[in-house]
Amino acid sequence: MDGNYVALGVTLAVWLGLFWFLLRLDKRIKKLEEKSK
Amino acid sequence: MLVGMSVMIVFSFITPPPQRIIGDASRIFYYHIPQAWMCVIAFAMSMVFSIRYLKTKKLAEDDKAVVAARLGFVFCLLAALTGSIFARVTWGSFWNWDPRETSIFILLLIYGAYFALRGAIEVEDKRASLAAVYSILAFVTVPFLVFVVPRVVPSLHPSDSVINRNLKITMGQTEGTIFFSSLALFTVLFLWIFTLARKVRQFERARQELED
Image (cartoon, rainbow over all chains, first blue to last red):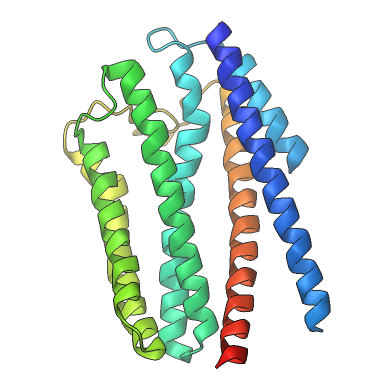
């Protein structure tokens, strides 16, 4: 069961890291789109 | 999206009880199947955009086709990775050349060759046309490798995890809710990444045109 919580923690960390990266990329793209208008 | 996926992850590890024989390893199923599913969807999208490119000769369609193929390749790799973790826990080794493992390996080689083909041709129109034809031919193998081969050849891979041969859902209500939520969330995540990657490619093209 302990291993289960470790796996849960790792999966959540990977997901939150990916989400943070995509959100930053999304913001950058929106800025670039505004600039290029 | 943030809340939905986070809740799904927490529930997938806590709510369903461990399965009788494979225990907690069964939880990988909520990630492995949606990844494999997204890989098929991405390769299908790549084929559709390739057909559209051949019809219209617009490079934007080729851009969408290559972005979809890249994402399909990444999801295919993730499915192979999660599958091999499951194989290690249940069958004792990461890779057994089981029919399902062999077919996903062949699929990775086929789409690896797609990127090699693109890298080998410098003239943009020619590259886009040849890659589009290749992408259409490559997708013909996908249903065969993903759905047919593992069912025809005896395999250790679980085959009735979601739907049985009579097309009935085999999961309990809790497992089914988490699984279909995961499938929906992975689809939204895929579409978000696809949109971002397509826009990045558009900017790259615009920059290249300015430099030329």
